[in-house]
Image 1 (cartoon, rainbow, N blue to C red):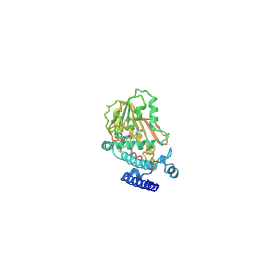
Image 2: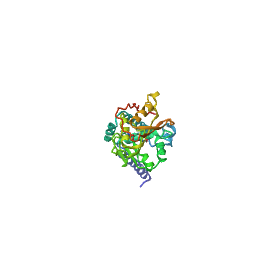
Image 3: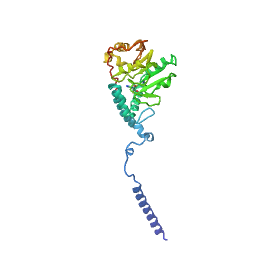
Image 4: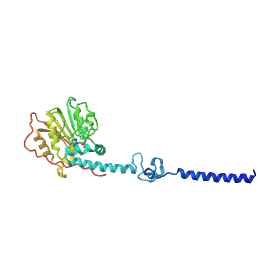
Length: 287
Ligand SMILES: C[S@@+](CC[C@H](N)C(=O)[O-])C[C@H]1O[C@@H](n2cnc3c(N)ncnc32)[C@H](O)[C@@H]1O
């Protein structure tokens, strides 16, 4: 073979290779872009983007997508929270029975809100219970994630609209399966949510033993008459008429108030209608 022919063959080989590679490229080309393709590449793999963009995630900063997701779930939480404060317990029970997964959405948002509180009322209640005999039987009305039952040694009946744990009794707490006079301490920690909250207290009165305790922690603004809240004395008076005495009231916390009532021995529920003050909903602001 001449030198020229060898050169031609080399060029030809190169052209053929180029043709093959470009036709291969066409075959391998992605068919259609997915949503994932349209999103920015993972910021952790893209340091330039992270440097430029104020929304880029850092060790303590969520990404823009994460922020949008949080905002959506925050909106969902606020809607569910408002629903719980503006309907009856029975309606709330059937609402969550249809869509129990919404209960997790509510509780994720609630935990997020509570993480901003310097002190959680349930911890004060836990301290109070730990300072007494562990033989006291407790009913946690509106237990949420049932942290009370997990933290103390006592026998605890945990009650909520949805049972996220086999130990939680799912029911509307105005109508529980607990036996009458079977409980020493009834706890309502931020759970007087329904418009018929007085029927929850009547149920607590039914299941409490004589001289049993009724502990109520509620959002402070709900008992602030200067801001549309109920008069706390009017509330205490209504609970007294149900058959309790007010043992003490703790108003030292900025976020919540705590009432410690004791069931009067041999107190029969009064037949006359009790004038229950309206408790305004506790609505959380969008942040
Ligand atoms: C604000 S969360 C407080 C949860 C818990 N006690 C705590 O301190 O973390 C109120 C809880 O009461 C429950 N609840 C509201 N109305 C109820 C009802 N009628 N029957 C049973 N649970 C109810 C809600 O589902 C929610 O889990």
